[in-house]
Length: 539
Image (cartoon, rainbow, N blue to C red; front, side, top):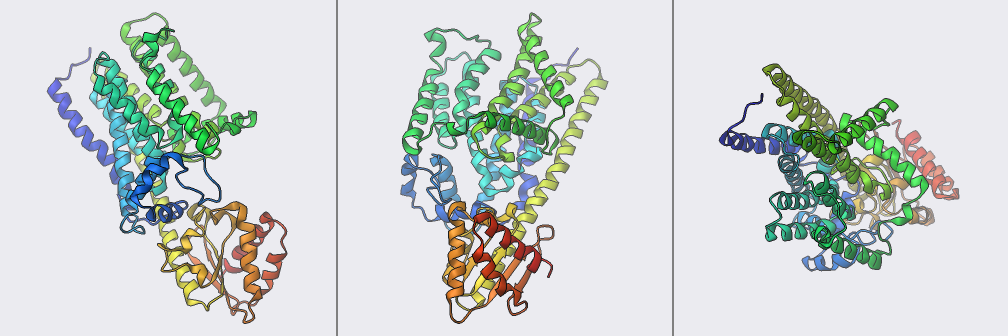
């Protein structure tokens, strides 16, 4: 027999729980507050720092990053652009504002997960708090929180969760509050224009109504009417995408090979969220997942007690259904990133919360003590894993800042027209060039004083990299005074920077004709990397 907790005690527990959830969402990341920019950060900061406030309306009918990556992306994200614009005003090279916004978004998402666990899954206060703490501490969330550009997934997740929560409360309260319903529509509009993956909302609402609100599908207008505005809004958004960027949902990526790749990503994302490490799931794990899902479906739809069916349906929706919907956009993403599972990870947190709730309902203090001990153990393991992942992001940011400062110093100290070759680990500076060589990250455009070249994957625009790099090499060779060569190489393991000049090793000059003789981008990139790793790295 379970003990009924007084309403006053539940309210007090929830108030303390909210504080604990916010602390869990923010405190593990506070050490990254001053961390420098990485990867796409450089391009985004440079772009949005230069945009006037009047640009915002135009982003509803144009790609949000324009063509800074060497192509026109199929992404209409005005609210995401606005978030970057806000954080880059004033002091664009100060990363603190960007990090604070990321912390706030993550904390907001954790509180939304708490509210969904209470309202949708019907969890007790303690179990709901536990679910939100799991979501906060999952090591897979680090990319979305510690990396400034990671908010491209935490921001749409916030809008998506808020939309769903307001709609769910409207439905569960009897669908009588017009302001609540209109509020969910307004939030959905914001969600659509933060990221295109939010188009799955209609399916989420229909499945929620069926499984949790006990509203089986019917082909009648009274049934369809609540979804119609969401569906119309989604269709209008997709039509706008087609007009502006020429694609609806990246349908060109839908192929048999893409489906196989999606299956691989599905498994890696699941393992990344659950265990903290990417990798394929074993056949045993797949069998267990399949058996558990079938068991949930049977419990949800076969005759049984009212409570058993309610719990089973909540578990089915908040678990497998939410996970599949959350990860489905990966099918057309075109690349893999841990942040793509940010929204989907609510499923794992919710399932653990449901499991704890059931254990707490078991008769006897031993079961409750075991449940609490298990919850503490799970949170402790995730916290330890998260600390290690955050430390990796901190090391990467420190290396990025050191490399950027060294590049500026060396390029401006060298005689005009010098050739500067620099290599930085891809995970730190991918897509960073040429933004990292220009204001606001430097006092002046470094290429106006020297000729800076980097390996292919560090360049923003892969297509013109070959011709641009060859052009700089030819311009250096054509100079009659033969200015110096400075090569910088950042060790991916230690972060230390090795330096080599042609005065120290004349062999640097002899490799330039070899670089010019390469006939493809891959060959030039390999030759450039070899110079950095084999000639500069050992110093």
